[in-house]
Amino acid sequence: MEFLQELSIWTKGDALQGKIMVGIGLILVLCLLFGFKYENPLLKGMFIPICLLTAASLGYGSFLTYSRPKHIKTLTEQYSNNPKETVKMTLGKAQTDHKIYIILKIVWSTLLILSVLIFFFTVKEYYKGLILGLFCLFVGFLLIETFLHSRLTHCFENVSRLDK
Image 1: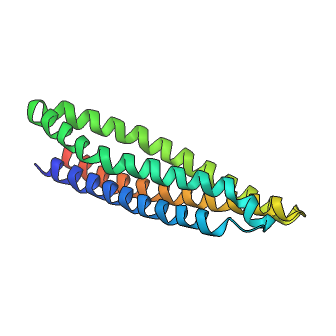
Image 2: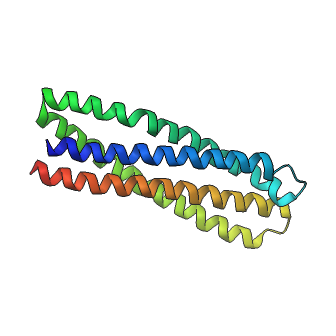
């Protein structure tokens, strides 16, 4: 039963993060509507990366909000039928996700550092805005991955102890 409690806490956390991401996405939509109607080249350069961040926040946040409660129901049914196989399958998926999160954090961090370096060598305002927008995009993606990975690690360390 503790296995299901740990998974329930994890899925509720992911669903909450999804709701927060949708809220941030809606705020970004307002920023896009009101802030980017000006003729400032810096803001024009930031437009596309901020649109991408908005789409990611709304899309992936909606996905987390919608799918995680269904995921726990599916796992509960599988656990009642075959507990050992469900735990083994869940731990295997968690290990795969853990590796993916590590790779993505390295990618976003590298792109973040690269965008900072390019920013200092860029002269035109439009390109400075573009690089600044990419910086915001990479910071957003890094934050999303870090929170998801942190929750996953904590939950599945507890599940691994229960499995032993």
